[in-house]
Image 1 (spheres, helix red, strand yellow):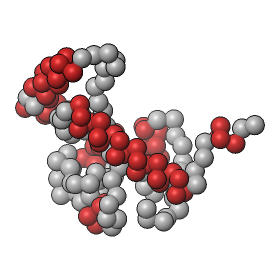
Image 2 (cartoon, rainbow, N blue to C red):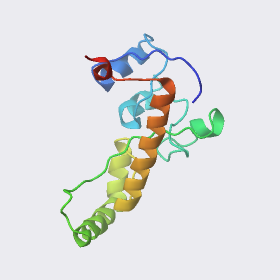
Image 3 (tube, rainbow, N blue to C red):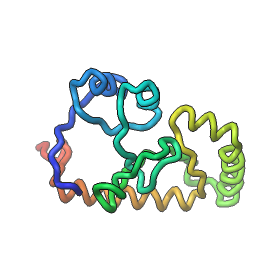
Image 4 (cartoon, rainbow, N blue to C red):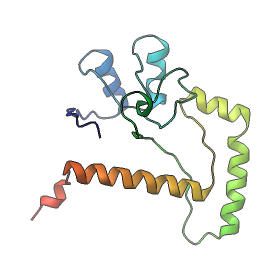
Length: 155
């Protein structure tokens, strides 16, 4: 979207990547708050912006990229709960009610926030719509950039 060329450096997990940023081996990193929060709190790294469309309660005062530099930009990391296709709508609704009840407890929210996770409790339908939107955005970016997997070139 920004038409910039950033070299991707692959690390074997988030920790080696974060260590590389702390050591000054690389200049920036896109990573989840959970992995970076201790370094921000210790003053070893500076957070520049969040990649969600809106600011995050996990990092108060930190702007969203979309509001400062790149309107329309959003890249989020989602965790959902999934069931097999043969689970009835009634069972899904009941599970969703119980999951929402637990996720909306203040102690659960606090524990998740302390680990760097922001709770966005929603319905199965809302999760599906968010995932479809995210996949469509990423598909467009991949196609526009001409990115192909290695298997696409195999003979």
